[in-house]
Each structure stands twice: as structure tokens, then as C-alpha cells.
Length: 535
Image 1 (cartoon, rainbow, N blue to C red):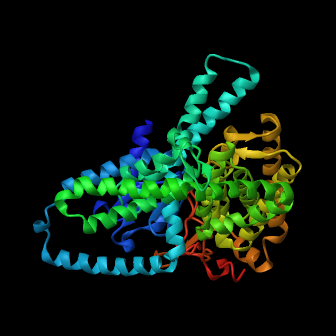
Image 2 (tube, one colour):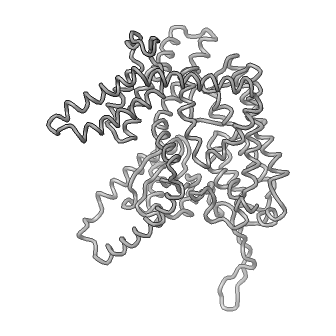
Image 3 (tube, one colour):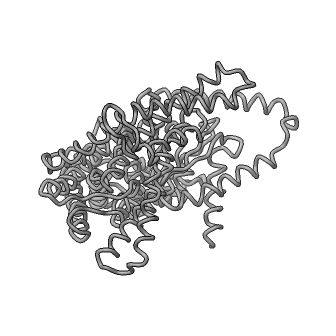
């Protein structure tokens, strides 16, 4: 089957399982997930979605998220959008729908809205909503960061080998052009996210990278182009949004087209030049200094703590606060030293999943889930293993965190010894991070340290889970066959199973994919023994 046909088939299989085109309010995607805003959550068939071969898992959060994996999601999303548009165009006019159907739809919509409101209220704390907004600003920039980061790595390799000297300057321009103007893109996305005019946010943020600011003195110091970086751009664009909204309320409509943009750029621009650039520059410098100090002095201990806590941060959505920090470090130093350490959490997860595979030899369902999700886990896509294996089981999630802690401690130790390991972009993890690695002692040393950290994470996660991840009760419940037992035919001709099958721990037999979870991070269909608090 052609790739286009395969992607369209995946989109066509997903659409009816989320309630059809009429139930889809919004469509977006990130690195690995198709994110849908739905009118009625009750119309979604979670189990059927999980059973689709292309679906690695589902997550019900502020949006309904279908995990498809990197690369795949970027190809399936346009097909899905096209199918939704086609279905809406072919839908009958509202007047053609019988009145009784309209009443039924209203009842279903009310029920779905109530369910959605309950789930959103559970997670919609002001802090988490703020972090989601920050993530919405930076996540669209990740593809460019990855592409430019890989080109930068290739260029560095060619320069070190003294190959293609006529080409390396062009590669350097390609790799550095985006980073030189990243503040403009941050300003544009910030204004868009906070409800302002995106181009005005970009215009104000562009002041930060304009070479002419070198002729301006603020707080007794001469400003430098790029001072404040992405943090300054973020603050400048937010200020521009509030100035613009104020102008919209007070400026007469006849003058709005002239006065509002002028005042927005003028007021927020002056504040940016004579305040935000200096303050944001000091904060950015402090972030870089603290990161260097932490790893130079904390080393293994700092890595152990960061790697061990990263998976819980992901489950709580708090990892989004790290995105602007990563971006700031890349902008300042050319790479972020935090990402290779945090990536070890995925290694611990992989090691834990392999241990579960060997500890539950009779559970065909869980073993099938692990086999299908393990390649994605090695490439840094951890959702299928987290939601389909370790988190529903409970204790293996904790031991996976220990595996990540040991791997991160290994990388942190070498940072303390002077061998810095960094990543030139954010987004990838696991084996997919190798092309983006950079450091201060040559590419060979950097790759060896990172690979050693992955190996330590795999082994530590495996050992911790194999020996401490299962109690007797957990083994008794899950180390049993999940396949239906042979059936016997009663005198009436009805088929009855000889023994009732145990409750499945992951996706049903034949699903071949990871399992999802509810908004609280647990499997909605899990038996009581799967509650991490009770294992």
C-alpha cells in the first residue's frame, strides 16, 4: 500500500471512532500525538482506537490525544483534516434532520459536555493551563530546531574532518539562520496564543535581535543584539497583546487601523528596550550559569534527581516548564545540557518494560504490547510503554524512574568531570538524539558518554523492575494467560468458556499497540490491583 493510502486509511479508521466529523471541534498535532477537540467525549470508542495498528495509545486530557508516533502524525493529520472537511460538506442541512434526532443529539451533547467538564476541571489548574500555553508557543518551533540542529552537527563534523570547505559556510548559515531570528517566531506565537495580533507580537520581538540596539544604553549598559533572547521575546509579546487589547477598547473604530498598531509597537517596544531586554538578559544568564554550576558541582547527584523525577513531571504536565529553559540554553551555548540527562528517563522505561516481559511469561496481552511498543520506546517515544505497561501496573513505573535516575546520574557524573554532553535541539530522545549530540570534548566522546548512560538506564531499569517491581499478589493476578480458554458446548448448543479469562492488563489480544489512559494517568479499564497506590 502506498504511503499516502496508508495514512489516509489510518485517518479514515480513526474518524468514526471519535464520533465522526460532526464531533470534531479542532484538529492539531505535536511531535507524536493527534490532538482533537471534541464536542461530545462520550461518542469516542477508546478500546477500538487502541486496537488500531497505527495507534500507540490514547490520552484524554484538555484535548483528546491519539499517539501515532513521530513522522506518522505529521502525515496522518492532513488526511484527517481533509476527511473531516469532506464529511462536513457532504452532511445534510440542519433542516433535513428530524426533530427527534435533534433532541437526542442535544441530550448526548449535554452528557458529553458534563463528562468533559469533569475531566477538564480535574486538570485545569491555573498553573497547568499556563504551562500548556507556554508549550503551545514553543512546540511549533521544534521541527525547525531539529532540522537546524542536525545540520549544525553535520557541519561541525565536516569542519573537524576538514571536508568540503566550500560547503560548510553554507551549512553554517542554514543551521544558524533560524536561531538568529528565533525571538521573532517566539513573539509571533506568543501573541497568537494570548489572543493578540501575531504579526505585532513578532514585530515587537524583532527589536531584540535588531543590530541597531547596540547603539542604545539602558541601566548604564550598552544593549547587545539578542540580549534577553526568547524570554525577552516572550515578555515583549505578552506586553504587546495587553497594549493592543487596551487600544481596541479605547481607540475609536475610525482610527483603530492606524492608532492601535502604532501604540502597540511604540509602547511595548520602549518597555522592551529600556526594561525587558536588560531584565530578561540577566535571567537568561542566570539560567545558563545555574545549569553549568549544577552539573559541574552536583554531577551524578543532580543527574540522579533530574532523571528520576522526569517521568512523574511528564505525567503531571510540569515538564512543559523546561521548554523555554532548553531553548534559552541552546540560544546561549549552542546546546542544552539538560536534555541528554532527562532523556535517560526513557531508558529506564525501556529497561523496565523488558523486565515486565520476562516476569510475565504467560500474559500474552502485555507481552504483545511490549513487543509492539519497544521500538518506539528505544527512539524516545515513551507513551505506549508508560500508558500501556508500567503505569497501569504501578510499581514498575516507580522502578522505571529508578532506572532513569541511574542513567542520568552516569551522564551527570561525566559532566562534573568536565565532559559536557548536550543536545542542539529539543524534541527527540532515546536513540533519535544521537544526530543532535554536541559537547566540549569532541563528538566521539560525547556519543560514548550518552550511549553509556542509555546502557546504564536500560540495565538499572531492568534490574530494579525484575527484582522489585512485582509483589506476590501482582504476579498472581497478571502472570496468567489472557487468551480465551478452550470452550465447551452445552446441550443447548451455546458456547461457554471453560474458565473466565482474567482481566487484561493492556490492550486486548490482537491489538498490537500500546494502551492509553485517562486524564489522571491511569488505565480507565484497569482492575483495582492496577492502582499504583494499592500495588
